[in-house]
Amino acid sequence: MPEAKVIRTTHRVVKPHATIANISYCLDRHANEHERGSALFRMAGLVLEAFYVEGYATVVAENLGRSEELMAVDGTKDRLKAIFKAADPEADFGRRPYQTILSLFRFRDRMAHPRVEELSEEKTLTSEEADASIENVGWNVATETEAFCTKANALLVRQDVQMVVQRTWSTDWNGSPLDSGMQVVGHEYKG
Image (cartoon, rainbow, N blue to C red; front, side, top):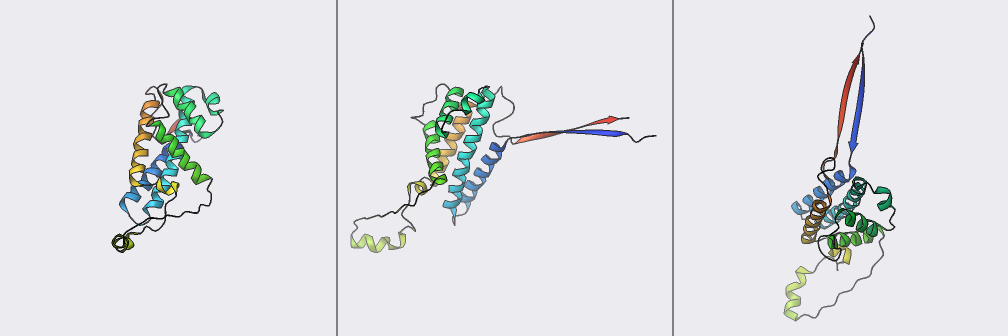
């Protein structure tokens, strides 16, 4: 008697933007728990937060059924504006939370297309202030990119990204914006 055959089918839905969001969250959590190198972890977390927003916006465009039209908009910031405006007609990019998204992408652009910067700082101090502050001189004069990566700003960015997600995700769409996908395996026995 011939051996019974089993047909296995596997279907997997992968949502990379959700994985990127989780990595970003973990980097920020690490930055909050460990002072040494925290600015660099926070910076990396914010770069990945921008990647998450861009990936999330692509999923929104697909769910709106206007992916081809919306993804054809030139420039990342203009494309994001078009997608989020299509999902949230009340979106105002001159105010939070959308204004924060644009700031996040200015930061991302500076990280992706860096330029050498020469910075100087001059302060007038009393001799007493100078003696007292010698121990508190920062390691570096901060660039605009570095200044973006404060603990308070990272929290603001995450809160505003979450607000944008709440305003642009429809409960009619499949799943949650942050589930990382799933895999379904089925078996069919033959013979």
